[in-house]
Image (cartoon, rainbow, N blue to C red; front, side, top):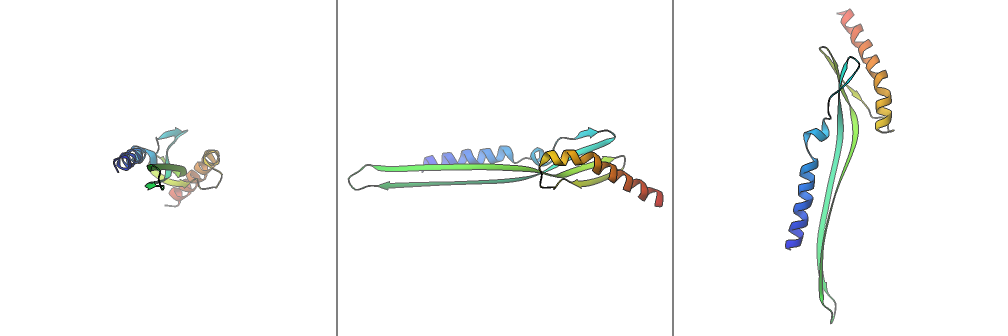
Length: 121
């Protein structure tokens, strides 16, 4: 049983080290006049088990196992310029590369829309 507790402790420590705010909210970066902050989706899972047995006339055996996994993907970006801030989704089904390719176009659309709204006020 001690072996299982040790494995479970290691898996728990791994998840604690990976599940932090910096994993979900990325590091801010500048893109021209825009301040951008990536927002990530994080999924985690873990499992473990133990077993023991004895074969007739054989020695007794036991085993313990554990596993953990982390998956991440971009959800979008928080984009700001001056007092304006907006969330721009990156969900395209093509991964992070497609999101970064679309970002300048999305920023331009966002700022055009914001300027129109400011003029109409």
